[in-house]
Amino acid sequence: MSNMWDQRYAGDDYFYGTEPNDFLRDRASVFPRGAEVLCLAEGEGRNGVFLARQGLRVTGVDGSIVGLEKAKRLAERYGVVIDTAVADLADWDLGEKRWDGIVSIWAHLPAPLRAGLHPRIAGAIKPGGVLFVEHYHPNQIPYKTGGPPDPTWMLTLAELDRDFGGWEKVHVFEGEREVHEGAGHGGLSYVTQAILRKPA
Image (cartoon, rainbow, N blue to C red; front, side, top):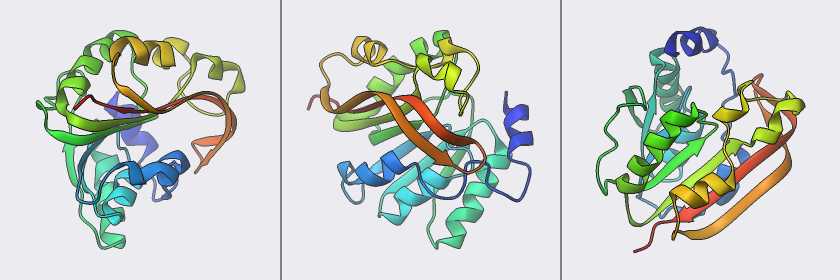
């Protein structure tokens, strides 16, 4: 898997651009300044670097060493620092009650891997902490504007309800929106968004 992403990130250009995901940009205040945040499938660093610029302590994890090297260069460009970990989310240790927030933007994974990862995410967030999600919804397939070709890799609010039951729904949305991010995402899309707060 990482080899595909290493190739995708190999050029000088940033495949999804250098600007953060706009949903994250608009709602980043959900994380208090100084919060310790983990960004899953961080790629070339645009989201983690943006959060670091807001005064958060950021760790980005990704399977692509090429992507994360570019993330470090992007951080240097903005005069901030992010920690990085080259790892496979299938078996990487997220810790227990470790993070004030976990950000999962377009971190599409096979359904069995997600089923194993979600309980680990739930355990890794501190009480009162936040899970911040934007993924493509299975309805995205015919739009062909981004995301994997397999709908089972995509996410629904029903799955989040099942795996994070009892968490406060700060924001939830399923439906159409415009997504424009570098060469990778462009146009009308069908997405799942959630900001969920773990019970204190």
